[in-house]
Image (tube, rainbow, N blue to C red; front, side, top):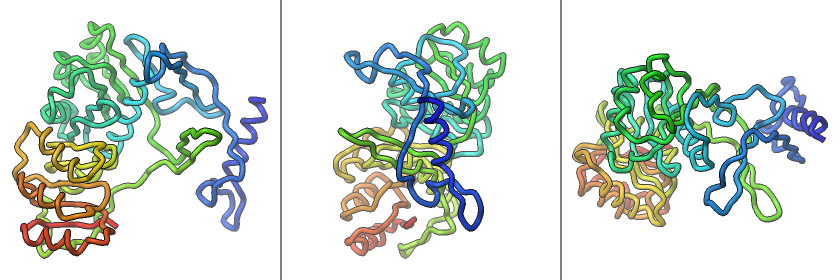
Length: 334
């Protein structure tokens, strides 16, 4: 059954068209979804102690990503560790420059880039030191001793990075429970699945990247170069925050994050309440349009100077008018 499933899954992913061989789901979803996984790790429990948890790895392909990572040290991984590690890995891979992400319950509490990985980590930690306790970290470059030294005094559950310098492993070896995962492979096109009672929901993996050339300035005032750079950074991060999602940021550092609230204006307020660093002069990213001007007005109260959002609300004109009245720059990404 495994053998036949591997063949069916492989052939189901491709089709021949006028351009030759193509991945089927780039053309159209397959009529049948055949999956084949092997048990890789029995977890102590699932999301809660009364649930069973197992990690299954895709059959028929070289090990990659979080499911195929090499654990270099630390106690056994939990279901929640793996969920957070995936969130951290996806987020840091948005950046080419050294980047660090601190994750709690699949949401970032701090994200930053820097000239070095250590600088990025320190700036990410400064965003919310309280929430960083017992967190999961993601890095997009090999972990060096300087970065290991910076995090050694903090309590961390697990780390995902492409590799670890011998000096970094030596520095972290005393933290017996700290899980170190060496992860290979960038995020790539694949189906994301979520079970329903009686079926499965499938969607393409979100590989959207920021495309500033396609953005549209809708306010009377255009963003400055410094604001534009901060807007790009914030837009990359807000993609990885659970909706309703709001990110306050500077050019290379988050300042406040409002996640998972039932109304967008509440996420705006929460992001400001969570801020430890000064909010004056920050930009704000919203993962969906503002349905009312109130979110923009709340952002202006705390010192935001520019906002990025998709646009598309029936009240866009009112929201833009509020931005103009408050002297904010506003960008629609479409």
